[in-house]
Amino acid sequence: MSNNKVTLADIFKAKNRIYSVVNQTSLISAPDLASEVGSNVYYKLENMQDTGSFKVRGAANLILNLSSKQQERGVVTYSTGNHGRATAHVAQLVGSQAKICLSHNVPKNKREGIKQSGGELVIHGDSQDEATEKARELVEEEGLAMVPPFDDPYIIAGQGTIGLEIMEQLPKVDTILVPLSGGGLLSGIALAIKMINPDCNVYGISMEDGAAMYQSLQADKPVQVAESEETLADSLQGGILLDNQYTFELVKEYVDDTILVSEEEIGEAIAYAFLKDNMVLEGASAVSIAALLNDKVPSVGKNTVILASGRNIDTDLFLSLIDKHRQYIK
Ligand SMILES: *Cc1c(COP(=O)(O)O)cnc(C)c1O
Image (cartoon, rainbow, N blue to C red):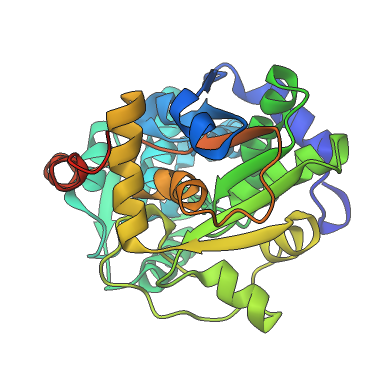
């Protein structure tokens, strides 16, 4: 990891490191979406990772690279849920302890998931920023190793392994749609893809309310955004850090465009994925479908990959969305 930059070589190193802990996920076709847009569409099934999201990749790459002494001392993170759960899961596999700092906004199903994976919950404050401060304190006070959710070379390289897998599974891919929050997922994938095929378009998608990376790109510097109280895409909440070191520049350099979708569009997309493809996706994971269904993707090629990033959605919320939309999705 030279010159503060993440490279394609780092992503290949991550690939060699993480498969003891992480699944290589399938790429499956989405025929209904394909007929909707008039070209091939595929789902990359990161929702089928252990813990229900792609976040195990970055967490595994970072934690497996720690010294055994540091693994014994333990790790800490802050998270809107899925990263915390992935960190707890990987820590447990290597016999390490994980403390997960959360704000009061994190949904109950995500808290339960973290506990189930052996993580210790530290609930602190009303925003992701306050949870972040708490985690940084624990690094200082208890000597725990930080497992940052997105702005870290090991995390980015770990998520980037998805890009390598997509290139192997579908070399002719020309469009990739990736949910976007802090941008670890998008920077890793975009870096891998653009190094191998610069002609492949890579897009980032966020919800309209509280899209921190989108607003930072508009301002041409990392900016603070008001956290949306209620969004179906809860895993996309949180800022990109005002002292962002990696993901802001990587997204700026390698990503073709960023797209916003509304809450209504996200809800419909969650229902669409289930009713058409029997897929359970959480809101953050359905934003790409929302972008496609509402003609928001600037250029849809012949072979589009949708990154299905996670499946951890509250059951009651999920059922109510299916109920609301089922009469319109035939
Ligand atoms: C974390 C997460 C994202 C966004 O990833 P970033 O690296 O923060 O941009 C998207 N979808 C799901 C399900 C997530 O958990």
